[in-house]
Length: 404
Image (tube, rainbow, N blue to C red):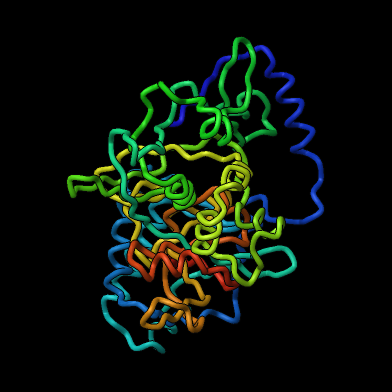
């Protein structure tokens, strides 16, 4: 669990001064930094509301969403762009939506009633594009063990006790909503260990923090990227592991690094090609992986995978958005592209699709109003789709109009 330290530390003034400098420096891009900038209510050009999946999976995702909403105070407010809606309104809205789809209306009738009964907000998207870049993720399954040996030598770590989360708003009001991950060294506050410190320098070794051990460092890396997964154990059982925190360092794409360094060409880059190239060139493995200083910690879950609102994700129906600017647990509608595979698992085409989804997760690389990550599941198609999806599309968020 995150821990917020409310004590004053020697050196915090220097830290705040530094953050004031870098945090207030104007950026060259006008990106959405606040919830009111991320969404705008639309009055024309509504989405089609055509859904390429069965509604039973959508109902399952929404009912799981109720588990999250029911844990909150009914008066807790969510920001839908410039407007505020209470938890009670959000839940009643999604209950009304479930009642509507349970009637199985004809497509035209569904569109008519949604337009009449629901407000629709559209994501403002990326700067200059006004569209959302969609990527995908999945639940990987890797071989591992709960004890190390010659075969299983690469650990997954749980969150260390010396990792702390400092709420910066306790020091200055202008840092409302901002925090940092750090550790205390003597009387100084310092950044937590980087990936290089942990993986190469073994900064956490010997502290009994290992959750499980995998057989391939690339399995560990891709599990960090996905945020959750399953570990198949030698006795035939498996355990679910899920995101429990991070070291607070910025996420840097290893795919982008390999592209910039000329290891891969833009048209060939995917999760699969990245893995294959690094397996074929072990001499650059540490160089590439340590380019990303971010590091993820895990814990063992009874079930999973779980999103950031602590509900089980539904394949094809759960998405990850920037939790700073989009409302958690929101009912959404997306329009983008998905792959078509041949019998050998090769992508032969990308076709348009659209469906209702629910915002139930977030991610280190999912920042801003122009990014979304779709959870595909855990089968072979999910892995291929997640590893190759990188397409622009549209994102809408719906909520029922208040009763007059």
